[in-house]
Amino acid sequence: MSKYRTIVIGTGPAGLTAAIYLARANLKPLVIEGLQPGGQLTTTTEVENFPGFPQGIMGPELMDNMRKQAERFGAEFKNGWVEEVDFSKPPFKVKVGGIGELEAESIIISTGASARYLGIPGEQENVGRGVSTCATCDGFFFRGKKIVVVGGGDSAMEEASFLTRFATDVTLVHRRDELRASKIMQDRARSNEKVKWALNRTPLEVVPEALGVKGLKVRNNETGQEELLEADGVFIAIGHTPNTGFLGNAITTDEHGYVVVKPGTTETNIPGVFACGDVQDTKYRQAITAAGSGCMAAMDCEKFLEGSIVHDWSETLDK
Image (cartoon, rainbow, N blue to C red):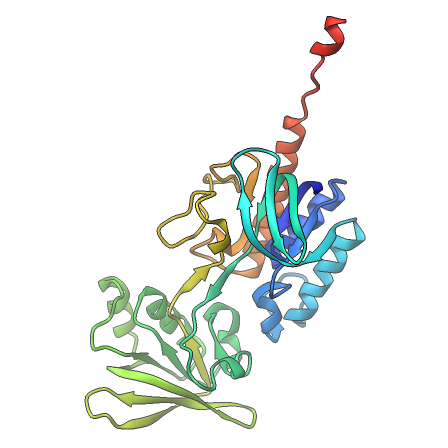
């Protein structure tokens, strides 16, 4: 069984930043890449809000650069999918499909959260070409354009309101007449003259065109008629799902599955197990905040490892 001082599970901005810091501290981390090495940024096009790149940088290029930086300092990468963990006692055990069982003195969980999609035709094919799940990331690209936002919760209201800073108008689509959003968030969106409403409509298809999308085809649930809501951008705002299924009951999570950490740290309820990035962030979910928490996790982890090394002199003294 292979043994490591620390294993990082996940390779988004959080995991790669943690790997860079751990490797520079000469801790030789093993980084487990999942089914999507590099995380959600590998599915985006140009990233303009990551500091240090005044002209922007392509998402896959940014992740590749971070990976190479971690490798330069001695991080080891293995491709596999974590199937099961055992955090009951150290050393911790991690079962990885295609690799086998690994042991580590410490663990950093940085598996992120996946945006929920509608599952309709034309959606996945046009991610980065007019379809987005992040208004903060992509709103700027739709300055002076028409936008459709799909969702009925607080996130949808917030994204619709935010996007009015750039778009000429924003149409909010929800499959029911009633919204799930809190009253204050609904009132804020309704008071914005740029926000239009297409309630009681079921999304059917994202309609593409040569250079992006033409709009969103919906069905009017009252009349049964189909209609096209013309738009240059379609933003899906129906929530995120943290990638924590493999953890089982090994660690404390909230009611939505996000890993719970001690405020101001990346420490979980298991000493020696840390969490960073979107897997524990229900609010910000930005590449830069994920990277920052990856730094925190590495420093918390390094401090833990230093503190856990206690030489037992009793045997020598008894002789």
